[in-house]
Length: 259
Image (cartoon, helix red, strand yellow):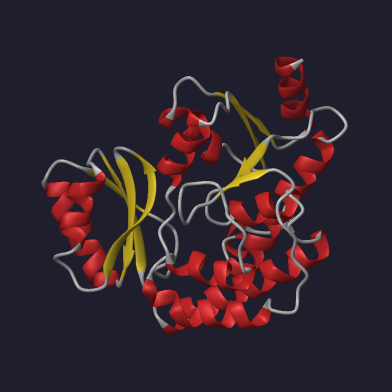
């Protein structure tokens, strides 16, 4: 599907999430014989699930069960509660939050960079808030999604996911894990509850990267397609050395760079 599927097929949540999860795990496994084990892992939104799986918090098989349940719940929620997400560039988080507060059911949800925040919510309010921020000088870019992810509008999906993944066996991470929810190291968690909260809560990525850098992490390797997380990590902390593995060519480059 990842090689032969149409863009339309791959854009569907129930297909995109398992494909991205698979790619990330495959890239991590391919690097296993060539790179040392990490001292810590982290992810961004969906990427957090792959990072938790690589850290041994659940098996690969159970990881696919979790992702399937998450994707199904989110796709169903998108049909029942349509919404929008818009990236706001060139405005600080406080200004974005202040504008969102003036609209019903609009929230700041992805804190990607000090000057890049994604807002999410009901379509009309979200687009109106984005327009106001644009008039104030920010640049905006609507995301190709059809619902308000990481907001309270996902509450039913969160409850559904929490119920579906109760029977899975979980374990603490094998190394430090930095959480989207807190931006800090993950403390012992009830994972089904955590996954539910993750679905309705902001992604505090700027805080995650700051915490990692403060703890002495100097290099990050992103496993999976594109370079979204590693690019954001580098922009958040210029001193970080960042790499990305998505195929044999990028694996070779990363191995050579870290030799």
